[in-house]
Image (cartoon, rainbow, N blue to C red; front, side, top):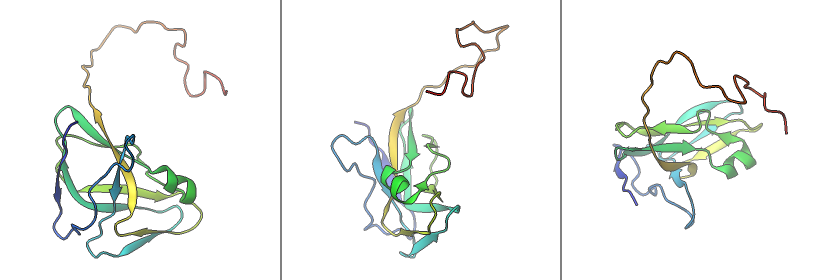
Amino acid sequence: MISIRVTYEDGADKAVALPSYETAGAAGADVRVNFTDRGSVTLQPGARCLVPTGLRIEIPNGFEVQIRPRSGLALKHGITLPNAPGTIDSDYRGPLGVIVMNAGDTPFVIEHGARIAQMVVAPVVQARFDVAEGLDDTARGSGGFGSTGTS
């Protein structure tokens, strides 16, 4: 198991739980909202906002943290993350925020301390990009955007 070091932002509510795995087999750790005023925000349908977590994290080299939507919020309320998965690189040390969007048809209240997203820690492989005279042929070729069928 790797370790992610965490610090709180100035003014953050330290009573809000750190990211946590809610079940033994969970791949994602739930991330909570941490408003400095301990209030809430109402997100109108179609709107998006940056939700603070009150945290900064230190990710070990060779890893990233992916921020993903919570399936229950997506199904029940249409709450999603428009850039999912959002990537946090190992060399980033700024505030951890979550871009949240209401794709539902009713306003959604984001409460202080609520679980708003999940973070997945994943290994990173960097590639070298080389210019080539051509590319190897495949059965698929250049077909894309639905070229493999609809079922």
